[in-house]
Image 1 (cartoon, rainbow over the protein chains, first blue to last red):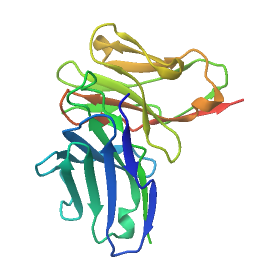
Image 2: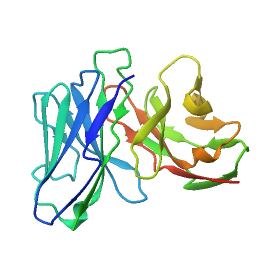
Image 3: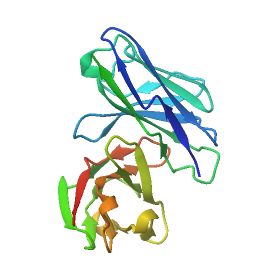
Length: 118
Length: 112
């Protein structure tokens, strides 16, 4: 079945630095990937929709200059948290849609990245 | 606008007992519905999904869900819960090639 790999699983960084999170579709091509953020004891909130070869579409209230998304290939999307602050500490999860396969509505999620900014 | 409601924040069941997690949705057309499970510190695992056809959907780990259009519900069931089922469960909805909207989740605790 479809597999999405997310790296790193967890990261601790200093306030003011930038952190890059990778989301890869391992056995399928994903023209669209999604980035979610999960706040403690809350549900997942969509941050942005990443389309291969074009600019990401951000949800209302998400700072596009802070959360940089790049989808340069059909199997890789990256989320870079720039100038991280403690309030950016969260669990970030990506998902990818196999747009060419039979399971085109089956959104597959990565294992998530726990970001802690100190 | 689409929305998903999981009315139960926390549920406790005894091991071996049956389980039903509630999910109600709001959407203007026929939705695509999912149930995901998340263990602590882990990502999301798809349990089952409904797109069309038979309204009773079978998933992994012995779970099933029934789509009831008249009640706008997609409740998750399992006849006999195992201790390893303790986790958080999310109901989700999409209209197709669109974003997925999640419910707030139900945390399942299983007691021996």
